[in-house]
Amino acid sequence: MATEVSRNDPTNITIPTHTKAWFYSEHGKASDILKLHPNWSIPQLKDDQVLIKVVAASLNPVDYKRMHALFKETDPHLPIVPGFDVAGIVIKVGSEVVKFKVGDEIYGDINEEGLSNLKILGTLSEYTIAEERLLAHKPKNLSFIEAASIPLAMETAYEGLERAQLSAGKSILVLGGAGGVGSFAIQLAKHVYGASKIAATSSTGKIEFLRKLGVDLPIDYTKENFEDLPEKFDVVYDGVGEVDRAMKAIKEGGKVVTIVPPGFPPAIFFVLTSKGSILEKLRPYFESGQLKPILDSKTPVPFSEVIEAYSYLETSRATGKVVIYPIP
Image (cartoon, rainbow, N blue to C red; front, side, top):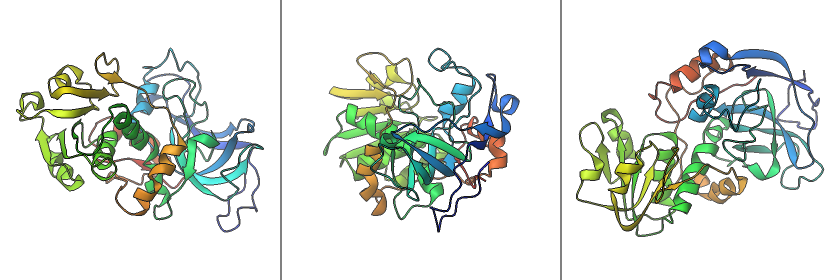
């Protein structure tokens, strides 16, 4: 185990060889399979990688879907430490790293391909490793907790809007607007892309949340079918798996983009490719306050309560991100 990182003096660091980490060695529910490992081995740092002291890590639905073996064909390895999103401090850099130095405050999604070639050592750990290209400098105005909540969901929202070719003056409907990806898609559409009109669906209790995000037309999916509305949209961002219905809500020539498999043409289905460059591009919008992290009321959750946090996430009751902090 390593001595604690001093944020005031990042050079005064003992480089760790092992880390405390949550892990699982079989598939199933978090409450049945997650265990705390006191001494997980840290792999050798590659030339293009950085070693990170994890300060905060956020949870994503992909974590528990992975635990349930939904991606076993592309993610066969066990045991593993889960976690995609990290915010932390660089404590060692590989020989080819040029963007970061020891002591830098960074954040990112450490799994480049989304559902394949996933790292054995994830972010629910004292220390983790990631390639330089997957990381970005933490916006100065954001806490580590706020920064950790952003990468996977924000990058997914951004890549979907790029694939759907959203641009100024176009209208968009976001299905699942109160979710992590949906809430960022709304913010991006409004503040970065200049959408002319934003509609979004949610349950009754989250309609006011959508209004506060800047949604022009909040739709309570428990009371009305969005595809039956007379108004049609240039883009539908499907975050819930309703491609059939989404196709009925677009204008002629409009596009549907979905992140829920299987997806089928003409809808555009994709799995995120993590890129630190997306976060760097959006940094001015965070620092100006136009884009805002959205944290669930249970955030922050202590490192000791990761199992309870996953159980809560699986209820789909969270509004915003669940973040683990502090990490020892």
